[in-house]
Length: 334
Length: 276
Ligand SMILES: Nc1ncnc2c1ncn2[C@@H]1O[C@H](COP(=O)(O)OP(=O)(O)OP(=O)(O)O)[C@@H](O)[C@H]1O
Ligand SMILES: [Mg+2]
Image (tube, rainbow over all chains, first blue to last red; front, top):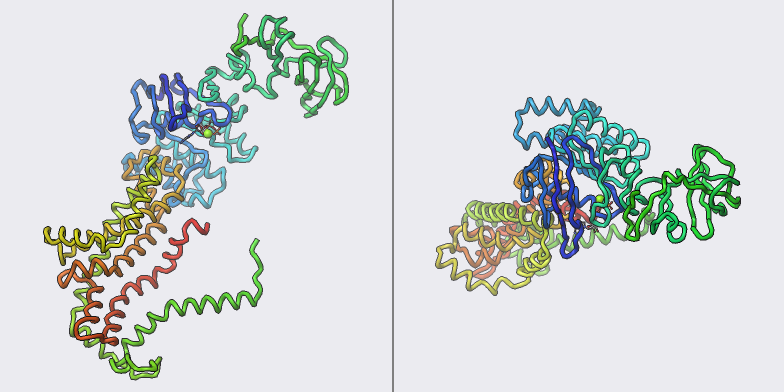
């Protein structure tokens, strides 16, 4: 079991309020990702759940029991750190076994579990090496091995893949997801990589300046962002925002259209403007178009559409995918 | 980006280093040489450097007159005991200062260090009276206590600087792995800080071994360590340079041997952090 509930959690460092009241319910077995801009409090929130920081106000419940005041060692969670934080003086075996040793398991059982975890993570040949004799990817696996071997109530990950190169990151992303499904253990995962968030999460928590802006499945966030912040944060390239005159016609203070929901053409319907930049990726083309009275919009087209910088183009937003926001930035639903 | 040093430069720095090294070492060398002279030669002007009548009679006299082994055991007990107790107190103290600091931690560290700036004579009388009333004069327990407390600020300070270098993540990982604070100290922090702890231990042992103010003032015979043994040769009947030198050589011999074998460790510990 591993259901984590946050009730009105606040955290201040000295006189700075960093987490400004977080309410969250993380279901047993689900994979929840925290995303948000740098410094918004993702790590802090994770450390509060871990018990490495004390909450200033509010309650944290694990399986219904309030854990405020319970030290991290007694919360039954494991954590994978961005820096891996392996014990440099212990072998891979020692690193993975440490938690089991602390729990006082018999030696034979420890050996069996460590070997099973090592086999799952392809670490068997390295069991007797020291962390400094491993590559970054292998160290990452050891850190994960150390987390899974204890069969915790939940895994906490703080940007675990950010030190790996792009190819390895994709591979580890898949492995972590597969492992989590297979074990069925609750996972809380911090990242600022959108692709990681969208692909790994059952549900995403979007944080901004210490507040939870929205909590929902990746598609919910994409299709029905709660406010301008979430709309702009989720999706790449960013959603286009249009204010004033054009927005008022839709009965909103601001409207938003994603680049993939704007149809660009040389002389079709829509707003007319000048192409300032064209990014040709082969599979897609991103056009940046300056439109008088509206501003600079980005449009994404599949494949090549034969428009380049300096050309004049027409942009037609898909009316079914226009997001409307009120003057406070909150989404308006029809 | 290592600068290519010219041969001339290497030569001059090498010579300079040897000269400085020799100057520092000379008093010790002179003491050892003197200990093998007769009292008459020890005084002679101009002093004879190597060509004198080598004799070991001073060592025999010293051993016959006072009990070297008794003093040496006291030195070991006092230096060793005070060092061990100081470490047991200082490791948790330095841990909390390095990893769970409060807004006042820096002030506390500075205050602790400031106690070392006061000359010990300033508190000699009160401590002497306290010791007299509690029957701690000339007792090993009393000396262990006073040396332990005297060196504690330096020990805590040194350990604090070493612990600061250890990534906090690793200790937090241990906590997440279910280690209590005690186990975290024993299984993670201490093994990782071994070079720092070892050099602190050695340095503190050497300081305690050589400590002369408190040992001379608070002990006479029962608990007297080697410092008292040396001092007893510079008194009433006048100075006996050769015997004093023999006593001193005997007194520093153990620590010299210890220092020789641990010099690599000492240098590594003292430059920890400075050279990565
Ligand atoms: N121990 C601390 N003392 C004081 N302020 C802190 C402390 N830890 C974090 N903060 C502040 O809290 C805010 C949130 O920090 P946090 O590390 O949670 O951000 P984050 O969302 O994880 O950012 P990033 O994506 O860069 O890792 C920051 O403004 C940071 O300066
Ligand atoms: Mg962070």
